[in-house]
Image (cartoon, rainbow, N blue to C red):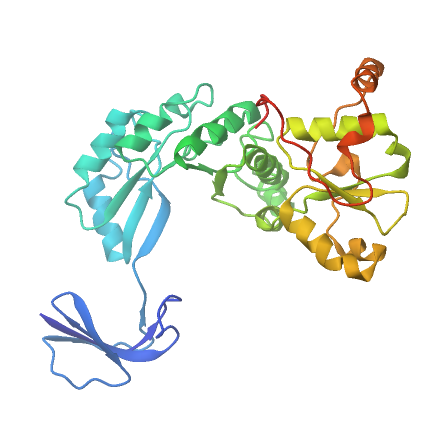
Length: 370
């Protein structure tokens, strides 16, 4: 069968024809020609004003209600609707009955959707029955065909449980999907909290309920060095948090002059090494008595490139703050016994090279913190 699409605007950033209005000739399901004007005779011609053509769309958060709620939707009817709307791939949330939280339920979705007109990808539940109490069998579900993990319309409320899930999926490069919603803040809210909700007499849901979870989960994902996707984001502040979270954070901070004593210097380096952070120390241009700690090789090379400009060159580095605001790096307080132990261990200042950048040796054994 030959199909001719006339004067369609092509929307595909990966194509050299992106943004152009052209004719598209398709033969037996394969695009054989794209040109400004094609006069070749075709079995069917589509000529509609304002027509757009793009690759198949992907829905990353759909609910086909199968199994358990087939009176609402089935895999077959959902796939037909997706195909009619231009979707070629659909990710299904696990909020079914039974919940998609083990390998057998994943296999059910995979096998039943093999002959459907669109590609169906199951999302495995993070917690059993999406109750947020106990982690589900994510490794087994991944092996059976789960492409991502999330509790669907239920937000994982426990920070401790979520960070364990983020660490767990790192073993197979998995990703978690989270709907940001703090259930402890007006869980019965029906609309955005504001003047209109008051006028209508409906319980409102403050934007803070979403923003708190977004901010928390970004920190947890950064701590676990894992991957996280937010869906259902609805506030400007949440988008700002996500945008900042995607940016590479500065991995440098200042050791103020009052903390330059050798015991404190050795203690700071020791704490950073326990967190598997490669530490470099260079002079600071802001205060000749301060020193800047660089936490990766990229900033070290940047500092070296600025060296010819003199000590003030270091000011151009991205500085997160002082020790207490070191890009999220927590430094516990130094007690007197620890200071005494460091003092008796030898020269406590040997870990630092204050005249030039010097890497500290790696820790002898792995610590509990990733």
